[in-house]
Image (cartoon, rainbow, N blue to C red; front, side):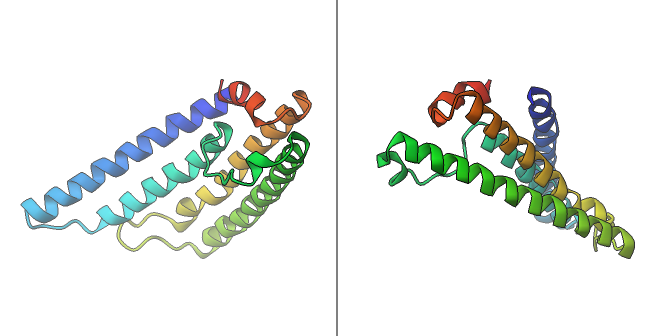
Length: 165
């Protein structure tokens, strides 16, 4: 899992930086040279969406997702463990849904053979982020479940050091 997380960062950071550079280029071309480049918005959107979607699993592994702890924090530890486990199972179901239907979406886009309007990128390539995100999230949730049982369900506090390291 450490290698996968490193690969995620290796892909995510350049995508984000590329998106920022393309955006900066677009602003310069539009407002300084008065010559807007139409493919800039498409590339910017694509790179940022890909970087953000890849970051979902990294955020999950590092417990950086938004959480509402108001009720959770006052529950007994056993109830918290049950909710954690249910959350992991729901996360796995969501990930499988994302992976399955994302794969169908990529296959359909490949069959149709469409391309984006300005940058002319094949739509199946832009759609690949859906099953990829589903797979990365699935692996992250499986890791969470393994750590849950490895730590005998002692709660998320016990997992933070293991999952982040």
